[in-house]
Image 1 (spheres, helix red, strand yellow):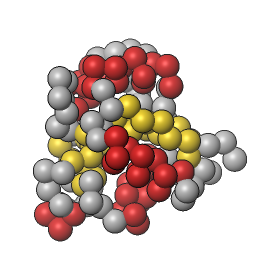
Image 2: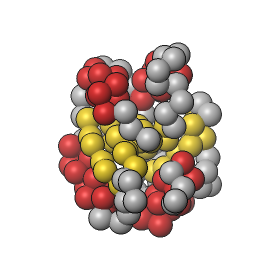
Image 3: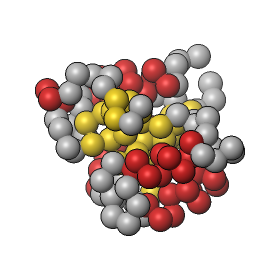
Image 4: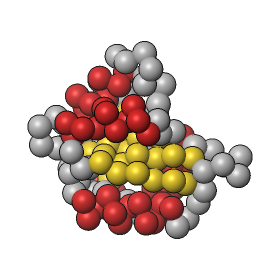
Length: 125
């Protein structure tokens, strides 16, 4: 089974490493990370992920702005994006809520909820 590629873009290196370990350890996924929002579009172009998990609040360029750039780029517009946020916790969000039309997972989402959303975008073969 071919591994699905996920790119996590978040300014917290610790969060990126933790999520990378959890995701790769629980499915056929290859995960790359990027902590610099300015380098994010370049990383997306080079890696060509099947799913992007994108922090909303980042220094320099926020996640919503990056998502808008992706939607306006003919080569990248079809890559699904889900936001990660610390603006709320799981009990504050009804799972599957959206921000600017993108699905949202909280940074403290349970592993089950996180994978439920990942599989929504990357169904098991």
